[in-house]
Image (tube, rainbow, N blue to C red; front, side, top):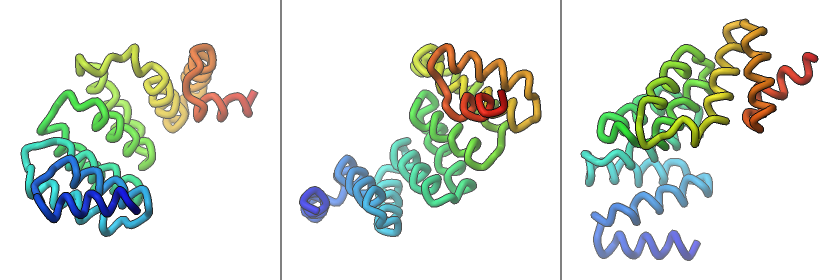
Length: 168
């Protein structure tokens, strides 16, 4: 409550304080005040339409609310503004996984691999999960089992590993 009040007071003094607006939106989202979070992220977009972060924040909120089409739109807007925004790439892949769109998840993960600051090696567990889930959703049990074994060996995805560990 103290942090929310501090950010509200700061925004009362200067409504263009972008960091304060985003943090207040994140606090609202974390505390389940989704309408208030959306209001902050929309205001952030209005004040800073060229920045990627207000769109990425809105994408996270829309994902949390299960509004995957809106999340996808927000995250794509973030990536239009900053193509190497690793967090937005990961969030977009998550949207596709949650919406059970394995082809889009795979395509998004391939785009993510091409982004230099977003090293594949730093995110190997994530890619293992995406590829394993894609194989699982497409019915390719052999490929899903291979990813399961690799994920287990590398300590990666519990989702794929769990599904195929139960099948063995």
